[in-house]
Length: 214
Image (cartoon, rainbow, N blue to C red; front, top):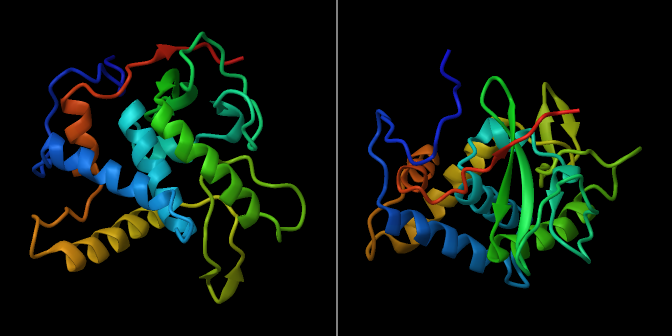
């Protein structure tokens, strides 16, 4: 049986048109710059993490939701702690283990230095978000950034986010960006998959190394 997670450089089909590689990279640069501004909202920082890790690994939303703090190795002085991710790396480069597809195939990917910077900033924001939670901080890397409501019950921020939460977060970014820059650039698509596919089809993500889970 052919595994769901295939070579990033293999041509694939997607029913909706992807954006250009130039457009996809613009999204990453825009989010990375905005995330590091002093007044950046936590949602922007989290979305920059999603874009950076997607560009680095080719991961889908479901794959990213399975990433835990201990799956990261960002080098020394990272507030989120050190993970179990082995392998030599160049200065400033990190590593992340992502469990891909329905079979959750674990692969270790390189993370470029510019993504590591955003991840370190998210580590600080993430700690602040979970500060008011009772008990231990969730292991999931991606957490909610707002108080939300679930069947009439208020749910605190700092909890693991859902796929629907990521979908809505991307759409909010798209609507804001399209309204702000609509007269100067083509509108962004409402589905992040159309951006992810641009990177995957161009062979940008690191294909990674398959690991054996203990």
